[in-house]
Length: 221
Image 1 (spheres, rainbow, N blue to C red):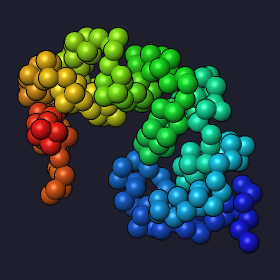
Image 2 (cartoon, rainbow, N blue to C red):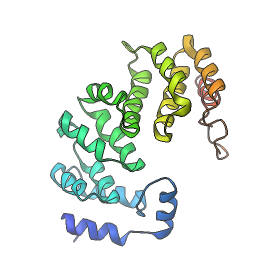
Image 3 (tube, helix red, strand yellow):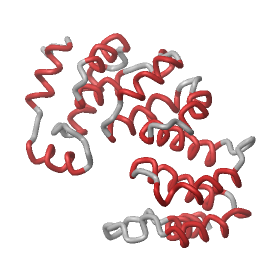
């Protein structure tokens, strides 16, 4: 029978550690070597357990934190609690899962989007931009889309990498979803050339905004 205490789960995660997986993950800034499919299988066994999720998060271990994000209850977190954990989430995969699996499902998502958007910490700001991408796609009412393009035009070229990626995603999303702003979005992307030479595997879409916009619009058409 599985030991579903924090100590037992930490031992289970340690046993799943794969040096090859760690080597790949470390290239992306993530310090764990656990296969994500196996991690999800553990989460499926545990189901939703908020208290255990908080204990796993508190270990500071990346694999444990990823597991915590899969078994937590997103709506159980208060606004200040989410702000705290977001600022603790420095590893890219932990940060990405926290924003997508937890914050986006929270009733505090919009308030946090506004709070984080202009944060001086670029990793925190990237979360604000990621939430803005979601708004651009699903609920653009009351968003100043031209104003967002102004900020992208001014700041994206020299932004730190994680923030730059989030701003670039926002630029592409505006171009994809809003035909009246598409030409401007493409022009900004072409002029700034952010991610223009990013190596893209065969069959994948380039993250270079003009190409990304064109491909997504073609698929929708």
